Length: 144
Image 1 (cartoon, rainbow, N blue to C red):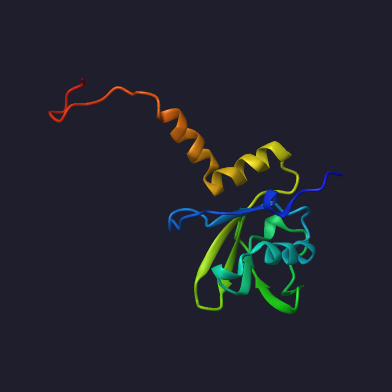
Image 2: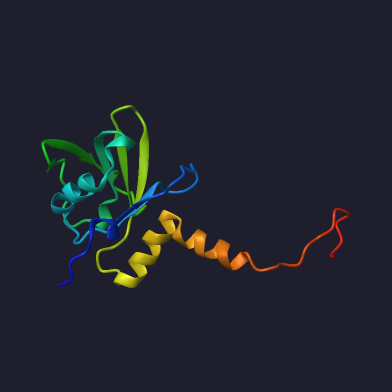
């Protein structure tokens, strides 16, 4: 089995946008109790301390009430009908961050494309393509 670098499994948006998830996570399996420690390891401390995790039940084989993560136990919870395919991280300062869960069986190329999009790599590539001369409009509303 191929080894994945942590950055190939987790990504955060460089700029906060309340209309989009804050990041994406590609766990290695569907056991939340096994995988949540990895998410905590990826989480940058400067983004805040995670106090609680809400999860989407269909994404996971287990539904723990708490999970041991490095150095402590963290409470987890879900809403029975939640099918958002996200985890919501409640931070100690009261903030919340939504992270899209990429299914573990997603082909690596597809998962990496999603993660790159979250990091903004896709936007950078698209902006390079847009750098080519485009038709312009004049200030009167007509095509030049």
